[in-house]
Image 1 (cartoon, rainbow over the protein chains, first blue to last red):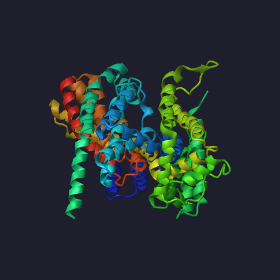
Image 2: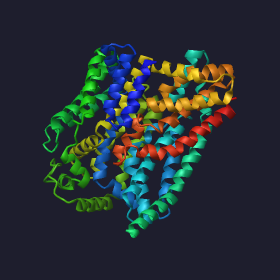
Image 3: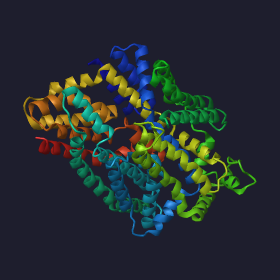
Image 4: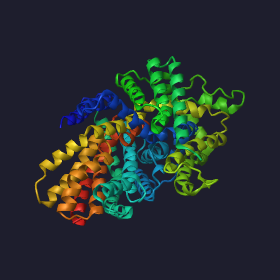
Length: 231
Length: 354
């Protein structure tokens, strides 16, 4: 039971807004020691964990080309393109990307979207540009909100699309865990099929929220303008 | 046969190079410790190859990680002033020199133009290159998708071309590299220097957020080894009332979400909660349909992933990439989706699995 104190370290650390690197490391050390591990065992676990998780950092290798293209005007071109298509709204762009992201994840193409590959260079600037065309110069809070929402469409689309694909980590983890532990022979396809209802609900909820962004932005901007006039 | 390790070594090399550049950059207020941070991160990548094969002790790497975390955690990691300024204003002078001919190779010219002027010249570049600008960016998904689908079946001399099991990771890494010469050709850049300086700038912008996702995997492993999962599972089984379906479903789904918030990863929560409730109570005692219970249980965990800074690669890295002011901006945007979706998962499991 004592090992649960490690979780308290994490919660307290985040609540006090300490540096997450520090919080996570201290929590790891504390938990390891409380769980009866020796210093060497804890450090061994640290090393093994890092070595086994290098693939989450691989997106680093796309940063140089994104930087190269951005310096040659990528974000400006994304804005120009959007400003020519007068029927594209912020909500439309976000919802469109969300659907594409979920659909491609559902057929196993997880890495074709992502925060470094698509959200920063394309989705966020396009969504912002559509709002600028409609409302003029955006208050900073509004443009921050659009960017954060663009990131959320990527996450929700990826999470609730990928489990429909049979060969994805989550489905294979489920089948391998329950098969070895409880002696089932679950087919990955059965698990993947039962992910569809939740995926549909996610599509409805987040899709509706994406489309609703236009009205939410109009309200937020009207409010900012009103306070500016009042001053 | 192309190995995924090659790309990890390349990343290591890149980080070490960033470390050297940062250590020599006088505009960085903490250049020694910042340089050491990036160089150490860089060394961890090739060293990991030997840890994976068992050729080197893992605790050395663990010790390195503690040092890395200590540097960042005590505020000794700083961004270089030159990188920050280039990010704000744009180093277009150097870019033009690189393109122009006489100044080939001089891609990091001193920064002179004011922010607005530089923005104007980026506008001019956008007008000049037009939609060609999208080509290198679109190469990334296309190459990645090709490697993940067709690439699996390509073999050379009886050996698969791409290391099996890592096709997607290799695809993404290869795509990022292939797109660089394409971009240089399209935009008349003669040297890859601009790509490298820009890569360094984005890396420094991300800072410790770039290392945090891997550190969290470390925490997950320590939690699992130390028996945190078992302790949580025991607690959850202890509070569960006997023989009533709805509370058991709620506890399983909610437990998955909460445990995922704590661990940052639904994969860590799944075996724990499934051993505590999912299998013994929902499947064995209540006769639930196993694939439905497990699939919806896992997706309930994903609702937790949307709400936690512990899932750094999804919720913290984009904060840095999109230059958001609040660390919790992405999470705030996701909570209104995550909460109703969790409720929906409870309802779906209750209705569909029993």
